[in-house]
Image (cartoon, rainbow, N blue to C red):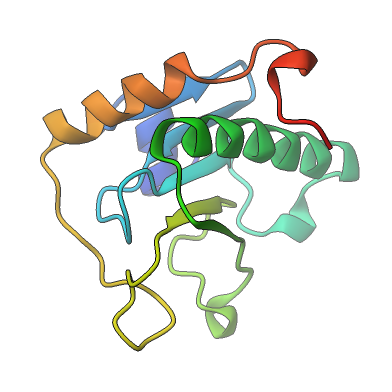
Length: 148
C-alpha cells in the first residue's frame, strides 16, 4: 500500500467510501464525484500504478470482477448503455496512479452534446444507499448473469 494513495486509503478503510463489494484482493466502490449514478471503480487492493505492473492473471481477475459489478449496476439502474474505462499514464488521462477500472452507466441525453456527462456531487449517504442496492444485485452464480 502506498501511504499517499487515495485508493489505498479507501481499501484500508482510512477514508470513507461507498463500498459496493470486496474480497481479499479486489474492491469496488462508487466514485465520489460520479458522471452518473452508479459510476463505480474496481481496483486491486495491492498498489499497482499501471496495468502493465500487474500479472496477466491479476488483470484477468480485475476485469472478471468489473463484469460482475457491471451486471449488478445494469440490473439496478437499467442504463441505456455502459462505458468501461481504464487509463494508464498521465497522457492517457490517468489522474490517480493506482490501477482502476471505471464502470459508467450511461443514459440517453446524459451528456448534453459532449461525450462525457458532467461530474455530480452526491452525499455519502446517497452513495452508500446506491452501493447497497448494487451489492444486493451482484450475481453469485453463473446462471444469475445475463446469457452470453
